[in-house]
Image (cartoon, rainbow, N blue to C red):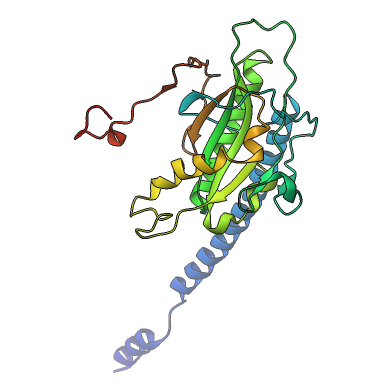
Length: 268
């Protein structure tokens, strides 16, 4: 009986709460990891900003990136603004210069005109990079990466490369600016509405790209671009080398995206 009672007592007695201790250890470790991640994210952001500043300091900061190069319809001498601003973009809106804009209010950063480098070959054909973009965090980070590689290749190509200025052509509802305006040279244009109206996307969201280009060529911003050629890119395009300009005033150059071809009309 004594043996049985002691055995029952040992079974009934609570054992050390090992699972609770493990939980506390896991929670403490998780808090440490979260703290380290937050600290690392802060360091990465600071490092990225410092690297961008260094790249900008290494060469003129301007606007654009590319999937197709086409001859611009305006002469580069017509109203090319001469600026020597540093890389940080300055805001310019239609309301601050109402007499210069016949289009609806568009927020924009001032394009940077670059003096022709000395000693460059006469065959050099500089182009202005135009990156079409839309709203959303996903596109914001793609835009940052594309612009970073633009700056990197512009510096690597030297003053005689064909890479010229840069413009982010930003389609947004009601042409509202975003937080990247101070980080990337940007022209804001109106995004198409949803539906089947004259200014709607008809269910095809990428219609905003040509629609933005139509608005782009009607702005003072476009007329102030000094380069004779435009190089259109999208936010998920990265320059791995300084691209040469293979276009001529008579013949544009671009990649044939099969899904943009109208197979029912070969002549298109």
